[in-house]
Length: 212
View 1 (cartoon, rainbow, N blue to C red):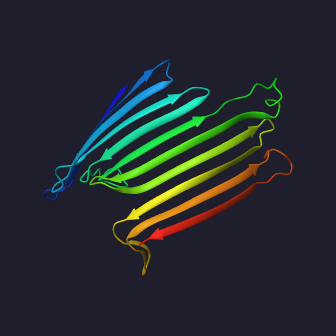
View 2: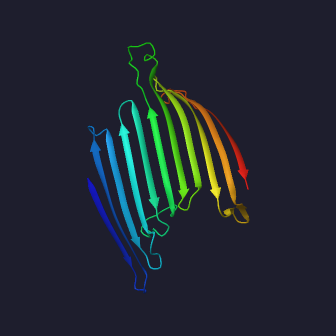
View 3: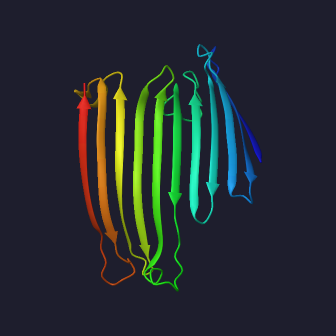
């Protein structure tokens, strides 16, 4: 399938307008297990010519056992959809995800207690167009889902942020230029919430480090 969109904003003021054009498409293969998709967009704004486009390519593969996806988004510095929103123009965004999720037969000894298990890994990065990394976000996670609807799991998250200019947190408080690493770990057990008595058990801890 293919989609096309055009937006136009114009006021009575001279040189006050914004136009955006975009198109996307999807291609399904292997009985819909594999999906290839892409998108192209461009904006026109006075005094913001050149490097005013966006491109995206994405691949998704999903079966009962394996789920994976990869995508890249390239956003021009002057891409300016005033009737929409772009969080970080002038960046390249990369995302990769993979998950293994075997389901157990209830007739087996393990399957009598465990419904399925999920092991996943997520890798997200945002790169400056002139080189270098701005953001990294890595997540390793494991979960066990039981037949009684309870769940247990754990994850470990690694984060990185690079500030090229001070970032204002509140009035009079700003983070200085530098590299910031902060990691987070969590383990949990969630019992069946349909029980008369239920609750949640969680333990979370964080570690941070800065280079300024």
